[in-house]
Every structure is written in structure tokens, then in C-alpha cells.
Length: 253
Image (cartoon, rainbow, N blue to C red; front, side):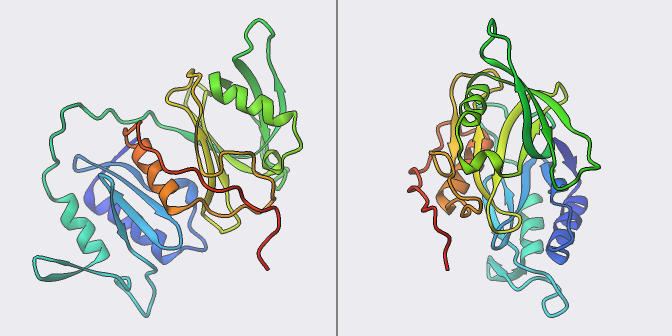
């Protein structure tokens, strides 16, 4: 993960809030800043997360050049960016265990086109991804192991809508799959995340609907599931939220 200076991180977050319709969400800022673990997410509100502390920024535009959200710290009013800077300038709390940054992940947006596996190694799946919306984009070949490989194999022998949704496939420099992020009907939002404690684990961890998605335009995952994902991603492996109810196949009118 990248190590940001405070000015670099806040400048990237400000660009996200000013240009929500043109921002390249594949470069969403995350990593470490002044010793703090940081990331930014675009949901109904633009959110910056510092050490699991969530700060809503909202939109920055000509009418609200500093955002339309303010925070009060020791009787002093601050804009969202000022508040995040204030947090980042504070000393990092010492924990009992060291935090080890995740290795850098890359992302391919598309669907699975080919999969194959050796019967002698059933927990290893060789997959080829492609982006149907961009015929000029090169396919990507990666490998999945353990529970992720099993999930991919089993959903591909069904007719669930989830398998046809162009998703974000997150992999490392060894071309090993770490997780799948299924987008929701709202731009920039996530409906479901499928992952595991490590790349070869037989334990599957799902945030969002536990069953296969059966609609081409799924709803955004609940706030509880989203925050459970953030906690789990930041090392709280016991973090969990109540399973979401099954989603109706019919779209809201």
C-alpha cells in the first residue's frame, strides 16, 4: 500500500469530492499517512476512513468550496478536510500487535470468460477475465485458490445473474486473486464482496448478500455490512455483521 504525506492524501480526497462524475475510482486513495491507516470511499457520501474512524465529506463544489459538512473539535468548527488533517496530525495509538500493510493489489473490471483446473489440484482454478464493454482491452489471466476457487467454480455452473455482472477482480503481483467486488446499481457503490482470510484459505468470507445475486442491478450493501467489511479489511478478522436479507428479483419502481 502507498504511504502518503498528509497534503498528498487530502489533495487526492479533495479531487474525488470535486470530480465525482469523472474521477477514476480505480485510484481511490488508500494506504498509510503519517502512520495512520487511511482510505477513501465513494458512497452516498464521500467518506474518508482514518484508523476505522469515518468522516463524511459530501460534495465539494462552487456553492460549498470546503464541503457542506462541519465538525466541532474542542468548540472549534472545522471543515471535513480540516478535521481529517487534525486526525492525521495526532500521534498514532500503539497497539498490542503490529499492523502489517496488505500487499499492493491490482484490479481488473470485467467478467469471467474461461476457467480451467487440473483434477489433481481441485483447489486451484485458472481463470481468464475480459471486459465486454471494452473490446480493445486485453484479457487478464489470474489464478484463484481455496474457497475463492470453489466459489467461482460453483457459481459458473449455475445461471445466477451474479456471474454475468462485470465485477472488480482484485489480485496481487503474482496474479493471485484476493477478492471479488460486485458493483451495485448505484455508480461507485458495492453490492457484495467475496474474499477469504488469505489466498489459499478454505474459509469464504462474504459481505453483502450471502446467496448468489439474482438480479442484474443489485442494491448497495447495507451500512452494517460495509462497516463490517472495513473493520475486517483493517485486521479485525472477527468483524461481522448480521446477514442481509435476500434481495427480491424485482427492481424498485
